[in-house]
Image (cartoon, rainbow, N blue to C red; front, side, top):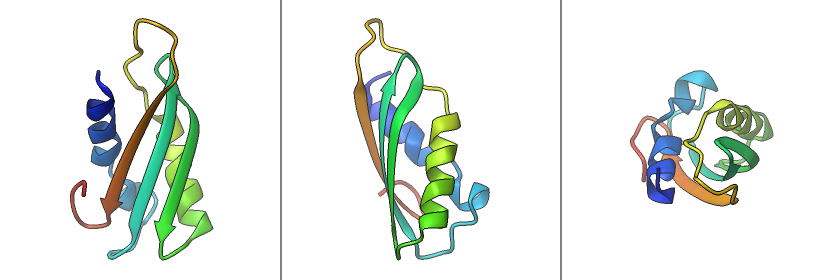
Amino acid sequence: MTIQQQAVALGEFDYAAHCQIPAGMSLRICAATRSGRAEGVTVISDPPSLGKADCVAQAVRSLAFRPFPMPVLDLSRAEIQAASKLL
C-alpha cells in the first residue's frame, strides 16, 4: 500500500457516523504508521472540538494499515469535510 493509498484509506473511514461529526466540520488527519499500525495521530478539527478530534484519533489508531516490507515510519494525511468525500 502506497502512502497515497493509505491517505485514501484514512479518508474512506466513516468518521462522521463513528464520532458524530456535524455537517460542515472539517478534519485534518496526519497518521504516522509503522508495521501496520498508527503510532502517532494528529487531528485538527474546524471548528475546533477536542472531543471530536480525540474520537477521530482513536478511530485512526484502531485501523489496520498494510505494513511495508521494512519497519519504516510513514506519514499519511487526509482532509475530510463532514457529509462529503475526501477533499
